[in-house]
Image (cartoon, rainbow, N blue to C red; front, side, top):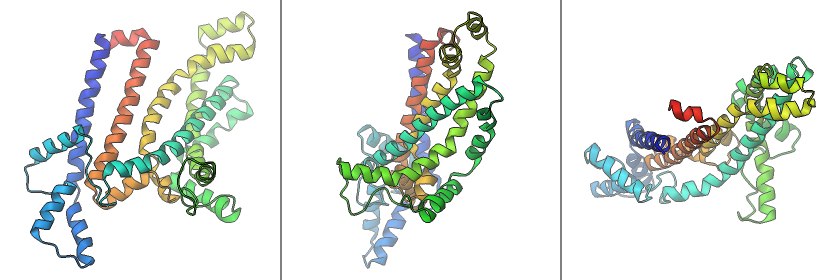
Length: 329
């Protein structure tokens, strides 16, 4: 119980620190979202008065003339009520609606791609590590090279080859614009078709890291006493690899996988931007471009919750798997 309370206390403090940084960082950026919105209104012929500016500043969380500590208290109070403010980029839509509309796209795209990359990398890494020097093991450097390639360059290559030259997949968008979004077979099929290239970019770009990590762990595990004992007993090679070597070598990958799932919420900003994909990454980039404090803070809040939650789950799982970690904590 003390171990659990210490962990919860640590993550509570980490969450408060993240909330504080989430409040301060957007306000350190140059410019003001209220001025940006009022400039747009002026271009449309609207009359902007000091009263108008004050009203929009209150609505958007801009510079209202209040002391910073008072703005901070208002910010914490609004978050406790679930009020994340109004987005300037998609005015007058609330931030919660913008995030709710974008989050499913990112969770499906990046979530499925992350799971596929992790499973594929772990399986291939286990096979390559079980037989060092094989033809599969010799391909490991090429897969890690792909992990070092920038996402935007890899995205552009796939667009040029598969979308422009071979015309197998669309190059932009999240679904066919003639369709109405909904939970029907035609729309789901269209979303999967449009999401294939962005998902392929993420899988190709990240599978090398999973493969290399699992391969190295397998190689080091082969010299452990329990693996040598299992081999000496004459157990089948597949059983030794699956139940003894891979089962222990995969533990660090499980921890990395849980943390990677936490970062799924943030999406892949570059990939979504290249493919004009309607995910949370594109919304975050638009918020930064327009100094949209409310939307930036809302997206960062969800990312913070996801990452801290994933780390907490990993810590608690390690405490159950290895009781020695509880004694050291």
